[in-house]
Image 1: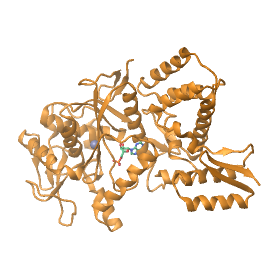
Image 2: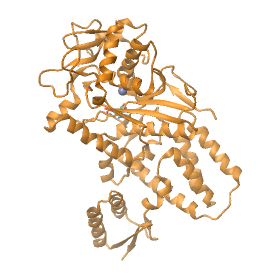
Image 3: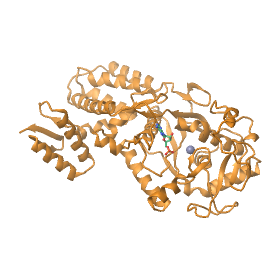
Image 4: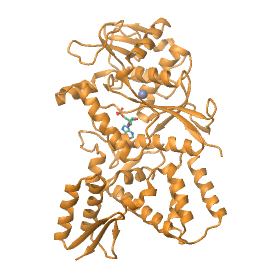
Length: 466
Ligand code: AMP
Ligand code: ZN
């Protein structure tokens, strides 16, 4: 069946065909590892996971690269401010490499908790400095770049068209205050490829231009070319990458090969919090750990992401996310009931569900529609192991670890629990998943004081009134 994907570059949804054979080559802009990734960042990686899974479900093989930005991402995308890594290192009084190692590890731990598949190739910027230097040298040779006292800059006037990915009007912005006036730059929107390091800068490398470090955009261009070639199938990122980062990646590649590096550019819309922006100053850059403290599992957050199409904004509130926790519990309960079901279902019915599911996901990853079909199966009054199998098949795309529902599912013995007790039970389930036995014991004692006995078994936790 035809798979349709929306392309920011052509501004349309069209049929996907890999450039070469059955393999799909993808590049995803990965995290800048200067801090904990928040749930907004993870919306971007849940989207990445869905794309991977849908492509695989359609029978494609993947060669997927995700970079780790551990140098060169300045505070503002328009080459202003400090390197985020250096700033964090100074604040935490640590070495930037130590900072990168710590937050990279936490990032992959959280990816695991969300059951997000790891791309085939993970590429750290600091491990690709020679490739980046070569890229910049070539751009200078080809007449697309020039040196100033601050670094090496890309000359956008050398391109036939800039920008091409976004509709932004440069002239409007030149009049405004958004661009730093740098007398040495040939055009206000020329951007830094390579940055000369100030004396006290920690992350710097020998280069033809003295001790210096890469700009953020050159990293992705150089690593993409190294692993995926001059032209590959799909490039992904968040909508914030459209006007600057991806625009500049395209410019850089055109300066070397004359080609746009990826055929399809896919961008995920932002997660908002309480209808507004996420920001450190508002204290709402929630992590998965904070969600867990509110009794919301990582996989419940993943399910929450499926309530909106990736190209629409999604509004996070704790209230709605808590209802996603209830939903995932129901999903597991429904699956387990089907698993024990003895009824026979005609193959035709199973095939119809499969077709409808495939139609939904192949329509530019329409997960809200796909979830509607999943719920029809879960809630079907006819209990059948064939439906359980079907849900396992859908889970190839959902990645909600449905097969292991028993491990997550808390059996409640025919009693109505108050919200307070339910919350404690939820927290204890999470503590046990995280192997935090001390917390699990503490909550068991608390439940005991409140008049409930809990028992643990392979099937999960059972709670009874004393
Ligand atoms: P960063 O670590 O800042 O480079 O960002 C990592 C990824 O998270 C990028 O793909 C961003 O586009 C994405 N991102 C950042 N904030 C949000 C948000 N609120 N919602 C969705 N994606 C986001
Ligand atoms: Zn990138």
